[in-house]
Image 1 (tube, one colour):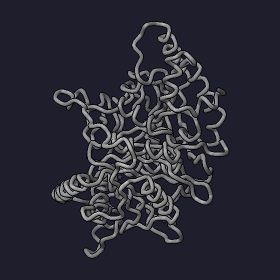
Image 2 (image 1 turned 180 degrees about the vertical axis):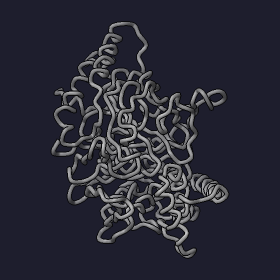
Image 3 (image 1 turned 45 degrees about the vertical axis):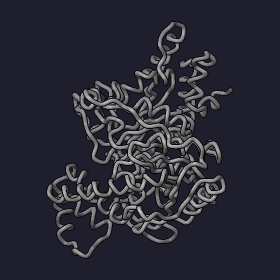
Image 4 (image 1 turned 120 degrees about the vertical axis):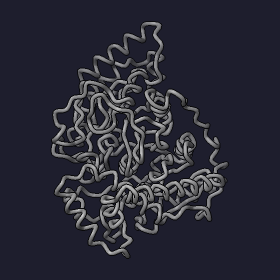
Length: 488
């Protein structure tokens, strides 16, 4: 096996090779660092490569193999961390000049868990400015390119992470998601990602730099795994998931239910290819419906519409409102004045997504509570839906990876088969699972005519994370999954 073959080997397989002493953590880490040195300059997936720290950890992991030490589930496995979560001794910047020289003196809780499981942190992967884009570029580290087409974005905000996976740098990544930030990059780069159920993975240390890091409960955002296979998503999630010991751990323990089924033919699948507020590219719909046809031929009960499906337009508008409200605290005084003036000028009849975002960013606390109450009602509707449906399949994003566009976000437009829509309307498909805290797994299912990856979003009931990942694994086994970009 060549070093490059080793770099594209799934994490679960690498764990087995290490435990059988076929390879050592040091050999694996050196292979990974060598590939990053050779290939990363054209991609800029990494903002920081912590080679010395990684090699020291790999030597320690290799020595542990010669002793009767207890080995963690990720012993000796290299991975990298999105430039969001604190990593002790490694710069963590949020892609912002404000934090350009910030070096945390402690790890975020999820990083602690990965290290305790034996993982070796290789470095940090690039993000957009303050994690707020579906592209990954900033003034600190520059632009990350898509391994399938360097002129296109790998997505954001976990764009560097997805590019690193697709390029064969590491088998596992840690990302986060509030607006598709795990799912969009996975879809754009042809890899796997899982947005966990809300609060399944603790977020202590995942906010703006602070010492000590405070325990945090989510409202919309989550941390989650990225990988090149569904099995590796499951492997990483088992390490990440569980209550924060400083909060829920005093009274809660993790007890996720097993997957609902172990055969594709037993699944009840609802397929949605059209969103009432956002057009979707024909290539995305074709890939999704092609998957649905193949599932039906295998015996899945596939339906195209469900009487209990919650109102997607209402879902997306409320999501946009609450998401924008969450960003309001970080607005500059100048932007606050500009946004408030624009919100006041809105007509009450304006029901566009842009209007809901403007209203949300200027919302009062009573208005926020009313929107959150509406969210609770939608959660109940989704619960009812998943009593008669196991899985909902839909697009992760309305288009494949698009060309780099570094204009101001409020001026950008997205081209969907010739139709121009506001750039931020891409939130529509991501918001379905995010608003109500549902788990959503993205898996690659096809390519466009020009060869760009296409993924599917697999949504399940709350805390049915093992079901969505298992379904991704079944379609991967039946129809194929990740393939390396041809030029890498």
